[in-house]
Image (cartoon, rainbow, N blue to C red; front, side, top):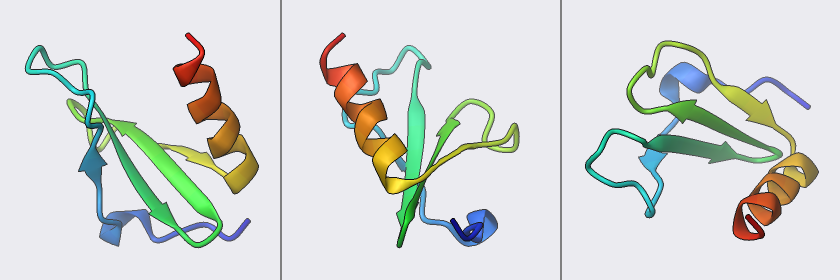
Length: 63
């Protein structure tokens, strides 16, 4: 997987985010997805490939 240009990525908050500060943001590109804590955007991001991202979403839906 090629490392994406995260500094220029277009981040968006989860549609399930609430006003209590428990939010995540996601950015996607060709062949990658990145997830970060919206309270700490400079704290790093979890970088996933397409299969990993699908499995991550599936596990959230099943929990």
